Length: 316
Image (cartoon, rainbow, N blue to C red; front, side, top):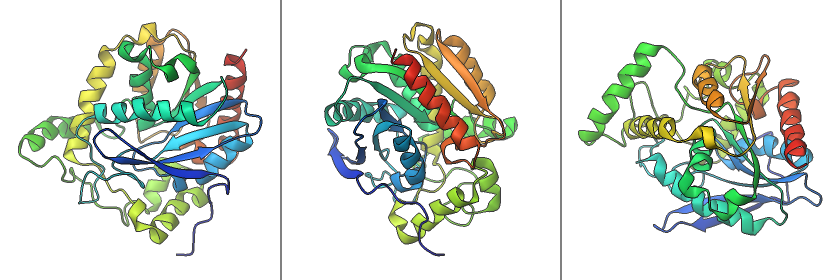
């Protein structure tokens, strides 16, 4: 396999932030001379900066100064499993990291205009963080003009029987000491992640899909495989927490973009969340799969256009 097709902009600044427990998080800053808005970009499960290189370039070209990071347990950040699994003890750990990293972003990029964009798992975490009354007084929360939720993950796609069985079994496996082990049907990064069937779940862009594999081939340390039993239990616990949060009192405008060809996450669950928010506009991107900002044309440009128009609207 030849080298990657897409690279981060040359003026992107890669750094590291240390969390209170000693874990280190790999960060990215991309300033802009005349930004429409600053943007805190929260990517999805198993993502890393380089996988998002072309999307980051497009967002920058659309007028956004960008702050982003690799979530703990994936990409270039501190790993939580020696088996290559996507693993976490609790989504609350990621929310605590977001408390720190939102302050870092606010200090790192000048200017009063801020949006936060969460894709997939990042959208789930952003929703929990922004709607948590206990975080309403944070400095970054006070600066936010709005939220963009791109194909947010509030429920697993796929057959209901399999989803239900995995959710029931995960707490048992965690109690048996198997929290960090791969769940049913999950495996280290490899042929499954590079198979054409996975592209159908993610994007209509073969170039974007294959570029993830090119980056992993040249930098194997960036790879994250399937999820652990602990990750599944942590998601189920987090979704219950989200269901109990006062989404109706969220005082920010929200743009929720859903993929018309979504099969990886549950769009019906996303619409249920959207209906609970007082100021949420839902937009379905026709013919798009899950990774809206790594899609083919014209779906990518439609998603970018929606984000830029939303940024201009909420800045008025």
